[in-house]
Image 1: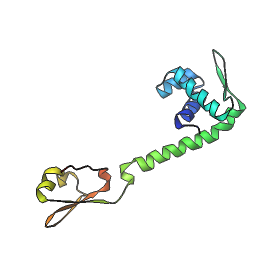
Image 2: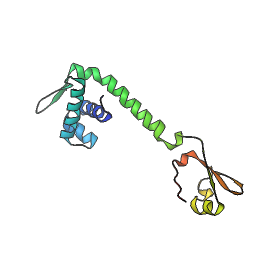
Image 3: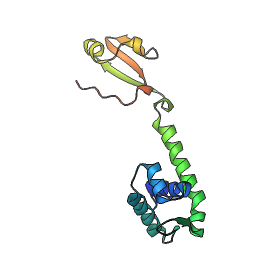
Image 4: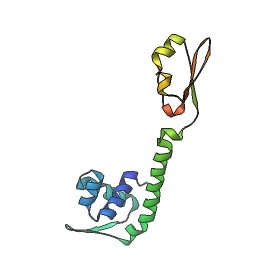
Length: 138
């Protein structure tokens, strides 16, 4: 199965018109880009580019791959935007701590006005999920 890095290299070569230009776009070396393209070609069993020492041209099979690569990379970008953003996660995290620990370990509530605090015997904070993963060692 083609990897995201291979498809990114493929599209970068297409857009830049050369392996060297693609390498600059990807902050990689031309041999690294060439290797990714070679691996992609090997996995698919077709040549995607005709290469010479001075230029590269896309083959018909390479042109056929373009819409699929664009779709996959667009979907990957959407996954990163939707799932990767903290603001896209909603809900609450409930922590039950002795009051002294709550006040010494948790940040000031004024720093996070959307945090709610409810008390019953021990301090119980309801934290917004946008704070992301929490780790508290006691």
